[in-house]
Image (cartoon, rainbow, N blue to C red; front, side, top):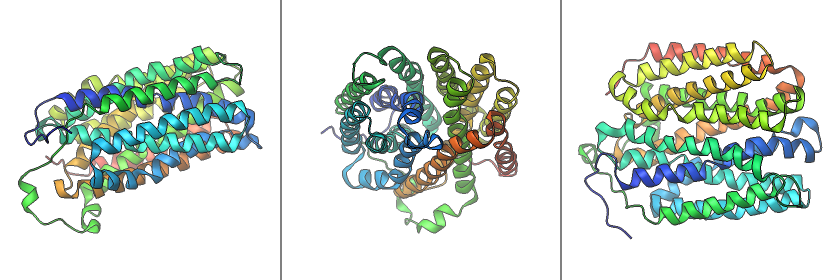
Length: 395
């Protein structure tokens, strides 16, 4: 095992490795959204359960957010990341088998385990922040998220091109390819340096959890991430069903919609780190809310392919700004000794509520329409804007 790095550099080995592994590991999310809703619609006992596999994936991510943080506090980030990637590889093969035998519940179980790995992947951004000097926290977080650009292209493309490679059912080959990517990520993570976080705040006593999570800055940071992920997951999960099943768009067009969304999510990471360093998390969060509002207006104004493409791209941009801004604010609300429990509570809250939004998307779309799916986001955006604007900036 590598020796701990007690003096974090600007953007070193760990950040580069985590960015590449973010690209490989995050392919599971867009692939699951593209294939999971379609496979779910084909295998589910009821039409309203079509989004259940994706919701269960998000639930796995939510339920293991706190355990992931606690596990890594015990055994270290490196071992936790590697173990989760290996489990995800086995889960991807299980998903392929479930499609082959047409087992809806086995498919759901496989996606749950992939979601468990995503809980660990969400901790990549914190590991990157801990690997650099405090002044480069925003840049490190955004650089890791840059890996999502490749994931946004690769995930839907894997589903589109490998959909019928094997004769055991649509997307069986796609999940086999995903298993290979997870194994490659596990091998790369072996090259990570061990992270040792030290600082002046280490000399201060660790505060009780209730004191950490009751701070206004912590609460606003968590709320920002909740809305960023909740709105994004709610709309994104409904998009493939609305475009492919309801509006009868081709699978290629539906894949393009998801690709535009994923690129919107992660391309801003090329510069959002620099923006948060120069403008502050408050300005970046405000820009995120505005972009999400624009996405609602565009997506709800029609059912043309352009509405889906531009609306979902704006949705991704809004998510990036609000999520990066909220994450940077979060890292400034706890001492290093408190980081695992503070990060665990944040991710558990964010992904639990995101799972609720993901699961409800199918029901809302079935009971109402695509326009209503988008318009339901507006009250949450208004509340978020009010909270961000009335909270003093923190350095």
